[in-house]
Image (cartoon, rainbow, N blue to C red; front, side):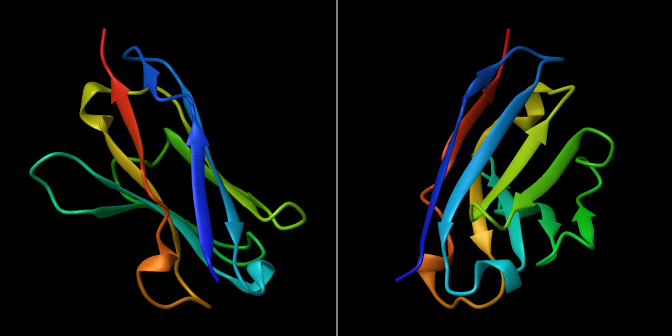
Length: 118
């Protein structure tokens, strides 16, 4: 059974930083492509960042480039998202997602609310 559990500080002021973590129980985590998505009210869920199985490749949405960093620790089955220079428009529910080696709704975490406000 796949389980993805997000955690992290959920509020920051504009210009501040937050770090989200996702603990994953996925078969063959080290060979699983992992990602973070987000969904703001009234908008579709969209990709924030993606990391290949052994961190050889990362991909970022344009809004995340230069501000966010995705990383993973295959020894601990975790994937993290470091978010710097936060803006109010980064306010959204952030989801951890197993892109490969997984199928169905269990491939998504429950989501964690991130709020950026003064």
